[in-house]
Amino acid sequence: MAETAVCLGTFSAVKTLWEVRIHKINEELQREKEFRQRSAGRLLLVWEERAALAKLKEKVINEGGRAILRIEEEEWKEWQLHRTSLQKIPQFIGRFHSLVVLDLSRNSIESVPKEIGQLTSLQELLLSYNRIKSVPKEISNCISLERLELAVNRSICDLPPQLSDLKKLSHIDLCMNQFTAIPSALLNMPNLEWLDMGGNKLQELPDAIDRMENLHTLWLQRNEINSLPETIGNMKNLSTLVLSNNKLKDIPACMKDMTNLRFVNFRDNPLELEVTLPPCENTDEEEQQEMFGIDFMHLYIQESLKKTGNVESCTSGSPPVMNPNE
Image 1: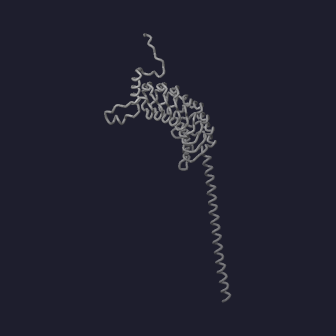
Image 2: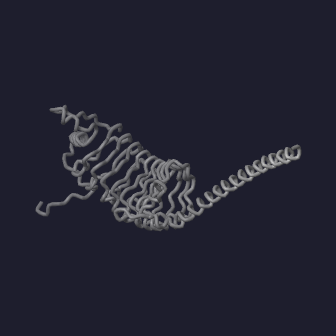
């Protein structure tokens, strides 16, 4: 009986030892399995990222005839990076030849690489609210560009003359920078329609401003403009003109002949004449009447002409036509 007891005791001990060992082996196998799964997952992620980048060109989609690169819900649908503290535009940006919209507004970009000029299909370049100090001439190679926004960079003071080659450019925002004059490049853009140069240091407008013959909206608020050239009267397509917060002392008589002008603002200028609009007959008219707007401008010019005794309309700088019968 004693022998049998010993045998049973030994078998029980071996069984227990074996079970513990099997348990440890299973734990090691489980850990190894989990490690392989994690490794495989990381490897799969790397390859997925590489595959996505390799197919980046295929992600440029066409919407309404425009090729657009985007990143939305893990799909490349638009190139739009805001508030990422991006300090530099990579040079390889020039490889995306089909890119049409590039919006890098509200970052910390300090310069624009010359490779940007390789984007010949680019239609919109939006770089407002950055720290850009100068504009590279290579942008003039973006021959499809229609919209350029460089607002609130606070340091840009000029544009390269080569930008006048952008014949399709119609919308430019340069507000809140350091311009002291309207760049000559803008005067040579006959298709320019919308321009914002508010919040700069402009002191005057060039006599050749009427060369921007298709311009319909001009924002010049918060500058130091003290006079307007009479050639402004030649801008027959101009419908919106904002001149608030400048140093204007007078309104040129020529402006009364700008028949397409629908909205103007002369508020907060040290105009020499004090002109008060007559009271409106009803509330609707009062709501439609803009303070220091169109009605104010016409009344001011009328009073100014009375004061000087000049009742003839201005001919926008052109010499008077003589009657051969006189």
